[in-house]
Length: 343
Image 1 (cartoon, rainbow, N blue to C red):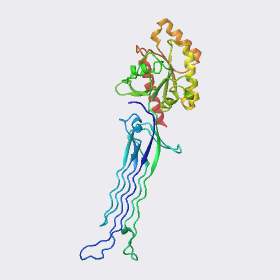
Image 2: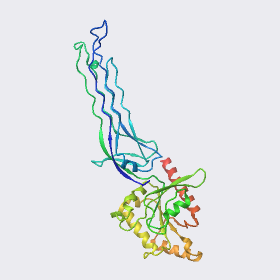
Image 3: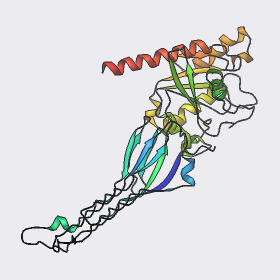
Image 4: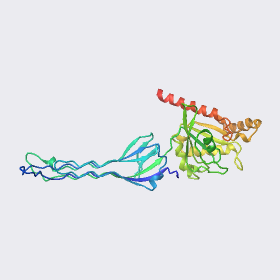
């Protein structure tokens, strides 16, 4: 299924049912008085986050969602039935905006989170409600109020603990295939990844984290070049970024250092908040170098970048160096969890 991370929908809550003006007429009770019942409330529209939904693609074909109208009131003081609510399933990580104003309405981050987006109309009143000592045969009744109608813009931001950042063909898809059960496309040409991929990485039987792979970022991504602008936002929810660099780029006129500097520049242009996230340097494809060349070549990259953070050398193809990386990520995330609990 095609990945879609934005969609516009219309939600229409049900109108409230009308009240009714009727009078009790039975044998031997010729003047029984008013007995018009109230209408039922209109149904409301809710958005609900569900794990079995991972894209907004379905909303392209079904953009309108309606709740049921409330039933009208009936005689013998019978109240109309309430309209059924409409529950619209969306992926966890969906942000909801008012389409016309751009106002943020809510954020569904956890499974089963629920958000009211259109409230049903209030029920109308039957003439029984207007009975009094001075008005024993009221003809008044009220109609139900209309339900809310809104146009919404949905934006999906995938939820992952770790995000992969790098140029096309840096080996991000190969890494996520090597450490998880996810199967993103891998090929020997750029832009094989066209949409975000999520994978669950298990450090052991009881500890795991979620990793996200997005399309490669190129120069000018912050201005809309390539797919970077569309998907960089998916890294904003992550707690750690892995900046992957191809140590021996094949048929590239850029050095690994130049490629890495372009990525850092684009991230700063896109969002300073994203740039301030913890970022580790992952030097990939070391299998192309012999043991003597690896250390010297990688150290040259680190020195020219003036990198003072954690550095890992790996080969996603041969799985060399992946275990130390996985356990270091797991320990980092656990420390963040402990700090959050203490706060």
